[in-house]
Each structure stands twice: as C-alpha cells, then as structure tokens.
Length: 318
Ligand SMILES: Nc1nc2c(ncn2[C@@H]2O[C@H](COP(=O)(O)OP(=O)(O)OP(=O)(O)O)[C@@H](O)[C@H]2O)c(=O)[nH]1
Ligand SMILES: [Zn+2]
Image (cartoon, rainbow, N blue to C red):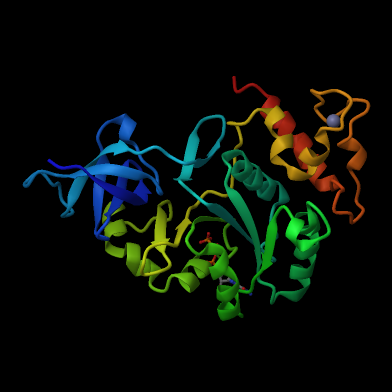
C-alpha cells in the first residue's frame, strides 16, 4: 500500500478528514496513539484495503503525523486541547456586543505569543455605535502598544462591521490573510460564522457532507474545520470552538512577562533579574503601570490580569 501526503482539514474526536494533493477529502482514522492528528497537520495516510472501508465510502488510516511548525493549544487542570497546527496567524474576533472579556483576550494573545504565532485582533459590530466606542476605548493599550507610530505597534487591531460593510471588511482582511493559514478564535456571538461565510462563500458546502459523516450525521459545533478562501488553496481559515475556559497551564508563571509585550519591554530594567513584578523594590514594570494614555505605559487592567494569571499558574495542579 502506498502512503501519500495529505492535510488534515477537519477533526472530530479521533477521526479526521484528510485532503490529498488532488483536493479529494477522505475520512481517516489514526493508526495508534502516535498518529493522532489535529487540523492543519500534514500527514502520511494510506487508503483502506478494498472491502475494509467501514461505512462512509473512501476511508483510510493516518500512518504518520509529519513534523509540526507549531501547535496552538490550551491546557487546564484536567486536559490539553489542541486547536490546530502549522498556523501563521490567530485572528481573535471580539465584538462591541456581547461585551468581551479582556482576561480571555489576554489569555489568547499570550498563548499565541508562546507558540510563536502572530496574533491579529478584530473588533466587530462598529455599527453598534455606543458599545463599539466603549469597546474600542478598552482596546486602547492593544492599539498603541509598542509606540506611537502605526508601524511600531505590536498588535494590529481592525474595526469591522461584518453584516453592515462586508465588502469593505473583506478588502481590509484579504491582504492580511493571503497565502497564510489563520485560526479564527472568539467568544460566542462575536461573528465568527459571519466572517467565515463572508470570506468563503459556500463554506458550509465545502465541509458539508463529509463533516456530517464525520459527526455521524449529527450537526455538532465541536468540529474544527479548515476552509480554503481561494481556488488555488493557498489561503486558509480554520474556525474552532473553545475561546472560553482558555487555560494556560502549559506555561510557567515566569513565562508570562515575555509573552506580554508591554511588560516584556520594561522587565529588563528591574533591580532583580528574577523579579516577579508583583512586589519587589526597584521593579521597572510596576513603575510603568498607569492609566495614562501613553504607548509605553502598562494599563492597570493588563497589570491586574498579569497578577491573576501569575497566581493561577503558581498553584500546583495537585
Ligand atoms: N450589528 C451587527 N451584528 C452582527 C455583525 N456581525 C455579526 N452580527 C450578528 O451577531 C450574531 C452572531 O454572529 P455569528 O456569526 O453567528 O457569531 P459566532 O461568533 O459564529 O457565534 P457562535 O456560533 O455562538 O460562536 C448574528 O446575529 C449576526 O448577524 C455586525 O457587524 N453588526
Ligand atoms: Zn519587575
């Protein structure tokens, strides 16, 4: 039996949908624990022997997961959940309504930073003028972090109104996504489905039947799926549930500062090299905490979240 290379484009439990170079998608099962794959993985797969396919037509086995460039995941006390592998970017989609959790946003940004994946932030529903203005204001530190000039900002923050100005938003987003694989993350109701449908007309049909088969006919929202934006299959979106309960247990408390760019920028100036930035004298981080709109400042909210995460990650799991 020949083994060929493929891309995992959907997963549900242990089952995956593998797309081969010709674009054909097949349900595959991992052969053993070591070949457990996630969306975005490149794998070697093998077609089932004739007569061996169980049920849904074309089936095969995943023989090997090829080396990953990165793996984006979250971890709480009880389990590790992988979102996807081999990502270029994570687009964190939040909205004017429902009001977003800044702690959740910070967690996602830290996880991206720790995995070496570029985060993008988009704030949707700019048509909801008053709540949008407030949310945009809450994002001030994220819009300015790194310096006053646009080109120096650490994060890119985009305003969107996906249902009101879809064409404009599409033009703003496409150049940022082109040629890349981007994971879309966001709380319930922020507009993730609206975004996928805007950028991938017929998204539902693209995964359609095969992912239904994967879920044994049930329509579940627990599947992670990869969609191609372009016919040439160079630009991909991955949508994944699970923005809530974003555990960072895979990080040590002392990893946090380097994953928060506004804190990292000052951490080198502390009197003690192993400063926790929580109570030490001569702490250069604490000296920068202020509510002033200054691109070098560390906002009170972010400093508070840093302290909460530090405490959370310092607790032993047992
Ligand atoms: N006012 C306004 N409503 C929007 C906008 N974009 C999306 N919505 C609405 O917000 C609601 C949620 O959008 P969805 O795309 O379903 O959000 P989602 O993130 O996929 O939500 P979940 O499936 O719960 O994770 C829908 O009623 C959309 O029509 C926008 O730009 N402005
Ligand atoms: Zn310090």
